[in-house]
Structure formats: structure tokens, C-alpha cells
Length: 153
Image (cartoon, rainbow, N blue to C red; front, side, top):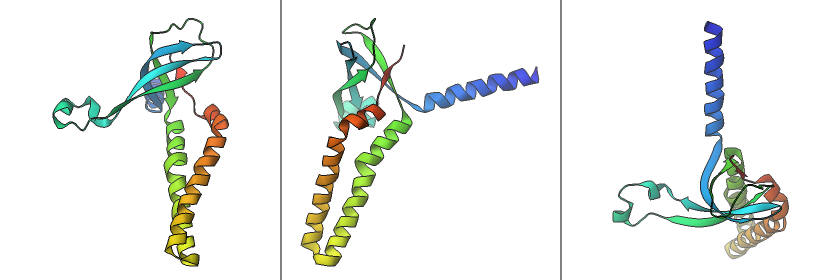
């Protein structure tokens, strides 16, 4: 009996951990095609769920359209679905979008300022950012395979 309780507790723990390791967004299906679908989600800031958000006027929310690859034959336009992604994907995307460019910009700024002066250092930092985001843009197809949402069934 004791062993069975431990197994049940372990299964509950794994389920809870998998729930914590996922990002969930509810959205409405906008388009369904042979290779995937488009889902419109409302991405809200932390204040948007606050009960006094209308009084302070600082709440922010944005509508985004997410492309979900895969074959979903039973999906219909207008249906509400839940998109699931992993927290690991979110962290990796944040690192690529914010941390790496910050480090590159600071290195270029200090190296350029040290070698050629502050003005050149500032230009070097801006050029480094432009090149970095240009490379990310060129690699968008490869990156989109790594960062994807699935529809919860």
C-alpha cells in the first residue's frame, strides 16, 4: 500500500512539473490550411488581469497571430483552442532576443570606445545590433522550427 501511494505521488509530481514547464495561450482559429493554421491570441501584460486595471490605465494587451504547423483536419475557423509551448522555448527566445544582443552591444561599445573613441564605439554597438538582428532575420525559417506551438487536443 505504501509503495502504491508513493507511485501515485510521483505521477502527480510529474504532472505538476509538466504543467509548470508549459506556456498556454487560449486563442481563436483564424485560418486552417493543409500545412497548419493561424490562431489569434490576446497577449496580456501582468496588469491586464488586475481588477483595478481600468482605473490606473496602465494595462497593456496585444493581439498576435501565431502560425501553428501540423495537420488538424477537425479544426474549424472561429473555434477556441489552447496553444501549448514549452517554457524552455520561451527562455531560449528571450535569451536570443535580449541577452545575446545586450552582451554583443556592450562588448562592441567598450571595445570601440577603447580603441577609437566614444563616437565610434556607439556606432559599433549600433552596427553590431543591426547585423545581429539581420542574421536572426535570415535564420527565421530555421528558428521557427525550434520555436513552435502545438494545439492541445
